[in-house]
Image (cartoon, rainbow, N blue to C red):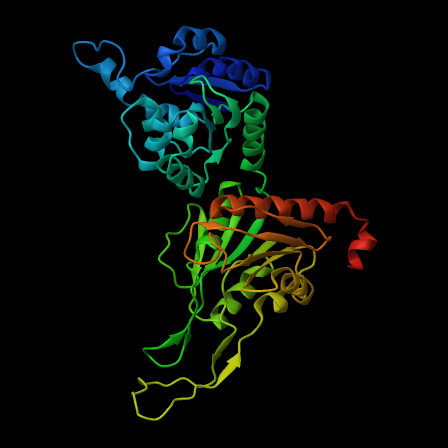
Length: 414
């Protein structure tokens, strides 16, 4: 694995030398990129000696030749490094570096590399406790989490500034563990075909009006993006949404619940994992008007009839496919999720209280609990939807491994 280690300015920069050695012991090739401030705490020569590779310190380095060729090489070096990097790690990551990453500022090699790279990113912040707790820093952290950046939270203790509290660079074992988890999850779905539903469905009443819900599609799109990044073939069946199609994802646009049902039935047989994150309309108008219904003095009654239950219908013949459903609830979340797990013949239900702060529709975070077929229940804290997506895929793989560990006769009797 080719790792680029970014080192930004802070007393903890010296600990990055130990991290280089540890990553090499794990069998990785490490190239170090230092900010100008980092060089005030530790020299590039130290990292060059440890890594055996050139240490990059400036966006424009060296004294260019008369024809400018050397300057041209340095000017595009960040692109070359970005293309050959399998993982970008920044430890320590200062408040300044995190702000640049979050806001898209590219005024040094490390921040430019971050924007140019498509590799996974792990950051380990380290700074003064007040800087860490400042709302600007926490807002930047939330932005990075929402983009899927893995954060290794700083530890608490006595800081170099003399204060005590959160802000210390996480321990080497914690950083290495996060790196290992990110690397292990990178291409672990290459043999899978993942079917994902996302967004709302719309049920027309007349050419102007329709029934729908508040779903933005963000959770389903995050799952599709994460699955594709981990090597899966992904088919995304999407209701109306303004979101862009994630890279590497095959997207099918639908409008109504019946259209979603048809698309799911068309692709379910080819899938190995089906994740139903869409907020499907449970009812539709029994009759629709071909022209706009005019306003009148009298009351208007619209008769509704139930839409098909997509998950329950296709899960009857799921075989060894993994089926993941969602339960967006406003009360009795656990009870309703457990009932849905059985009624839908699902392997996993991802449940949340949509009235809770940081959960539900049109936000970038979620607060969910997993209810698995094998009885496992996991309560997750508030996380970005990108991170929740990764946790869902991890749980799906755990269930897959548990299923395959059963004797064939036992599986057949499930």
